[in-house]
Length: 226
Image: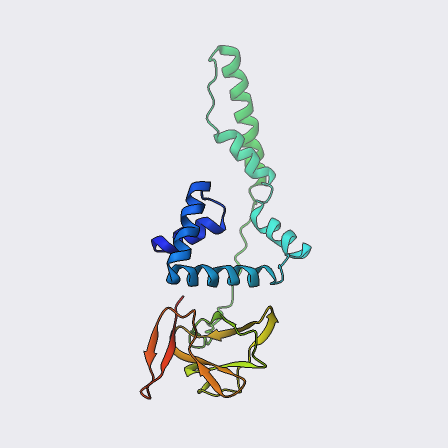
């Protein structure tokens, strides 16, 4: 995150002092690049607020609690812990006699638990099984495209990700002349353009990079990374 992005993030988080906020708004007014990034982040935050919130089910919470809560120790584990836990004792004859009695009783109880016969049980060997695992799937990144075109009747996007088909990926009008679309893309580098009313091709004004298409026009460039 560079200095400009950090400044925008602090502004959105209300982490700036009054003087810093005035300085930031003045910088946005004179710096078109910073103003474009700030508008882009504001629109992304507004769209993210409309996404549904996922609430874990009661079954999932109970299963999670069951996995993280340690099981209760058995009576044998409690006896062993009581016998092996270090303690500071005041040594005297009466205490030594009591300790000897407890040790004799504990040893007698353990001896009585030992089985008199040992039965050997043969376990049939089971051949190892292998599970076929498919190739690792490449992750998908959801990219939000936003375009302000109040007078447009339709807006779509064409680029490397859809074979430059101007009818395959339409944008939806979300109000106040704002057009948006969310694209599931693999990590990579893509060129694209917006198509207004099916005939006017323009580059994304919010794109941070452009590239020549070889015919005298400039395509917007989108770098998708994890």
